[in-house]
Length: 449
Ligand code: ATP
Image (cartoon, rainbow, N blue to C red; front, side, top):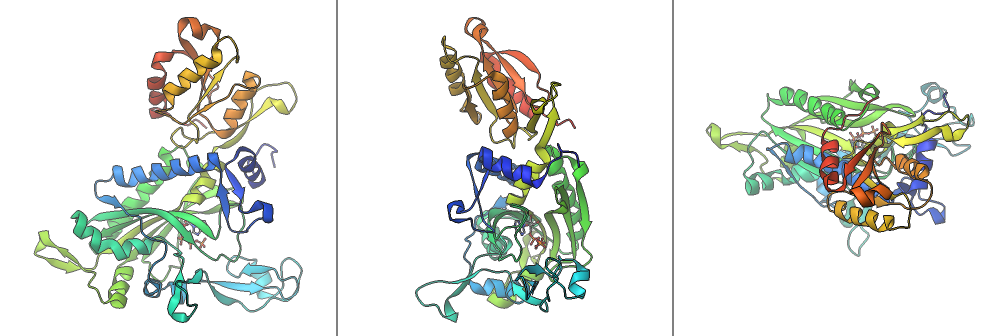
């Protein structure tokens, strides 16, 4: 393997070093399945979420948002099938106590009932429900059982009638939601790829039965184009068509990304049919039919096309996809290479860094003035310490697309150097035009590979 290739170890180390992602409760030895997002991580996460939210709600007239509670009535999870079906097959090694998901492990080892780690005997697979179960209120009895939601989708289904009534939505229409979900995953590995606490970005699109295939194709195309638009290397994306379908699905595709550990699911696009709304009709006793007032009050239970993406998994994807170690000099040492994150400027945690060439002679003051001008429009960073080359490298490493360097000429001619992360080109720009110029550069940005 080329030593400059992206690996998960490099991503984990960069994330910790620069404040993207930390291990949860690290001082106590860490809590597996949970991670904390540092100053740059939260900016990155918010940018991905905002890009998705804009794409769904602002750019689609017929999609509205929702923020439902994590705690829902326990009957919801009976209706959805999660209480009965949401399980993974678990096997344990009797000797070394390693735990595996039977469907994800070496199938020869499973058939031989031998632990791949130590060769010890494996237990029979048993179904393990992934929902976190707890109690609400003071009594810890069966009547007080409550679950942490394992997906955000159900919050949308149980509110779909409220939204039709309050917002006069007409089919076809969608409801978008971003929020936390919890799964008691048997194996959490690969950093933030699979965790017990994570965030989802889900959109449920309600259509007339019979129109579902058409909208399924439409949403597949839309979701593919979203990633393309946000600068992802599409050579690393592919479709996976499910042959074995979940109990609720008529058709399902995953968008897979080639992470350092190989191609893995990033987002699912599912035709969930009328399964969920029919089940909620059955379990709640409430009529979940849509009344088509434009069509002689025709009644039907809508079909649902779901686009379900992991926000935290997207963050990992954007990091892996942006990461590069590039040769920028030829001195024969490690300084020849820069580590750079080629984020789309709309995704990058910091948009502009302002760097005075020197602290003295009024350059720092001028740089601060410029930062104050720009900070209303962009997330900015200010750095006055160290050689300018080193400071560019520090910004490259966190993916800052634009650096503004303030030098002695700036004081006289009111211009600054604008440096572009990807090409490392530098141009002279009047201070007065800086904000517009950066806005224009963001709009016209295309990533070159
Ligand atoms: P898997 O089969 O890998 O467990 P899934 O097919 O059950 O996942 P979905 O229920 O379709 O996943 O969830 C939709 C999206 O939510 C996934 O594409 C993924 O991006 C994200 N997601 C699901 N589980 C996790 C998790 N444990 N950690 C992080 N993200 C997750």
